Image 1: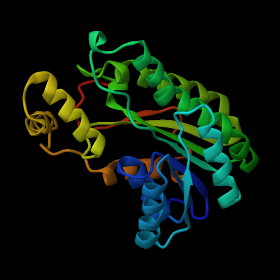
Image 2: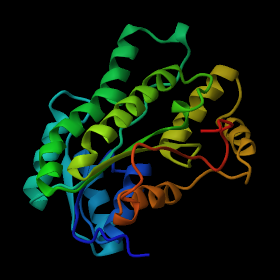
Image 3: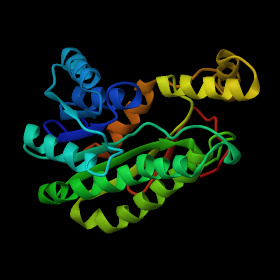
Image 4: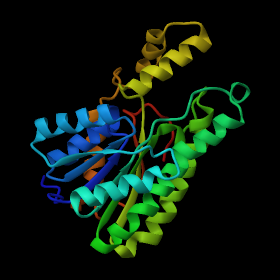
Length: 263
């Protein structure tokens, strides 16, 4: 299928590895011009080079910390300077620390609000003038299945992810007449560095190995295997496509059927 997004200008944040890297690769493979953003210059420049080599695409590295108040606007400004426009925004940031209510303090909550929620708010606010100028746009938020079904030990994610979905649903209605769709992808257990970190944290709490935790998570997925970043990225690329023009305001679970929620 031709997704109809060749030469569209895209920004993917948190793209030095994992899901962000996979999403940027998928969009570049569809012919998008892509800016990849991360706060680590060495890693994001290496990621951009790897995507260019794999896809032959027009890929630019952007150094920006989206968890800082000025970082989202800086990422958007650098993207527009590099690409000349912006039509696709994929928001992605490292998840908040795992933990229970008793183990997390006020500063942890404040950092989670900034990283998980305000980064999306600020990225959208900075990107909107460019998407509106194009009279066409796609915003896709990478979140977590915890937005639909809270998981033990992930208090901050359980609390913050739903806020992103509330924002996205509201924006989907406010921006539709501008030709802009807003959707969110609720990722399940996917083989990334982030998942390994979560497994190690959970293992320490339970007094077991990280591999034992991962085995338990695999067992909860009907196919018995973790997701691959490329599988998430394929869904994101579709939501960014012309073919998905009537998909708007959706919170789509991409978790291999692990979650039990009906909607």
